[in-house]
Image (tube, rainbow, N blue to C red; front, side, top):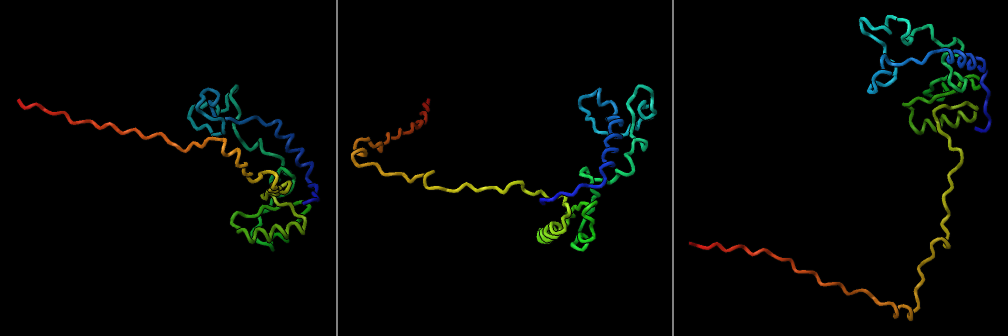
Length: 183
């Protein structure tokens, strides 16, 4: 798509970024203490857990007070509202100025291609399609790159000794069974 639409919700993205700056980084309880624990958030559930009880000096826990601004909720980072589309009819109802499309996972290849063509006509942004930036150029096979092996003149062939004689293989040694003395 050559032409890109600017999303209307520029202020919403700014307010979301501002709110995110003041939000603490929520970490798994005591992940700073043990290397084996990752920092991904898990709610503290222990009866006497200081983080659950919101003690002073312990990290903050997740709660609704840290929620993002209302105008920015549900926005894609590009600033468009995300709409999941299953059919071409649903695609035609999309507003290209404020909404971007995500083609559903269950849509097959043939129908997906039809939807992409329709989206391009209507200048709708599709979020889950990777468009190649530059078409890949196949290297042209030229005869100069790999010239056919030229035959050497007969004089040169005669001078170079041919190594066709192989060394004879060694005969394998077989172990002779020991004779037992009968006494």
